Amino acid sequence: MDDQWTRRVWPPEGHGEPAPQEEDLPPSARWYGTPAPPPRRMPRWLQRLLVTAAALVAAGAVIGAVTVTILGRAESAPPPVVSDPLAGVSYTLPPGWSEGVVAPVTGFTSVAAHGDLATVMARPGDRVDPPNLRSAVIDLGDLYTSLLLHGDTIEVVDDHAVTVNGRPGHTRAVRAAYRDVVNEPAFMRVTLLTRPDGGSTVMLGLAHPDDPRSRADIEAVMAAAR
Image 1 (cartoon, rainbow, N blue to C red):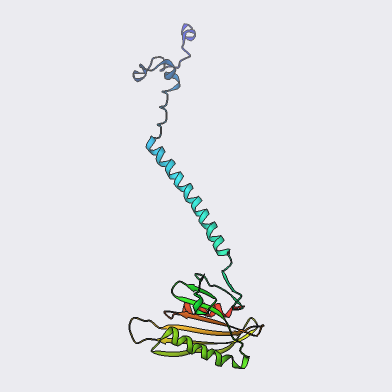
Image 2: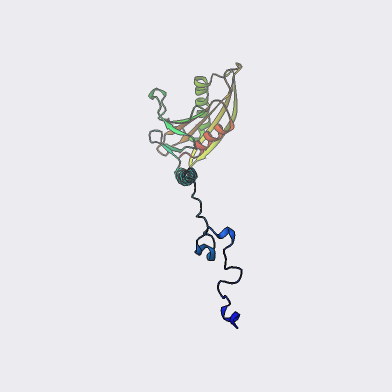
């Protein structure tokens, strides 16, 4: 009977005396466990590295957005147009082309070029009746060939009537080759268009060296004249 009333209820048996490894712990730690060590702080050098990386990512996103915006505006910008009221013509320029300034002594009143690769010029011409357009173009082609090309051989590569935006005309193209190893072949196209006021428009295209892209650009400029 005495054992019943004197039996220990708390702490349970086996826990009355602290274990050897718990002798140095405070009483609260014996019942609730050893406090967990606080989390280690991130080293400052690692913090700085992460902040720098985040800044670089943000800057890259901003630069990318600005680049896309600029390219989008460049693609949506209309192509440049050369307006030449003296020659009675205007013409749209292909990508990479820009309008230039012509010397008054040439007689041409407007010029556009793609660097040193290709050039298109325009000037006012004399009155030419439609039946005489081809002969007038041949005379102009011979004149500019002798002045500008000086080729050892001259080959006619195109000769046909055209109608550009309702304006009757004629176009003729030649290719000049040279015997020396310095000068590469050159290409020249002359287009003559009638004007509503009775005059005409002379358009001259030159490419040196002769290559398909320069030819295509020259033909595109003349075919879209208005």
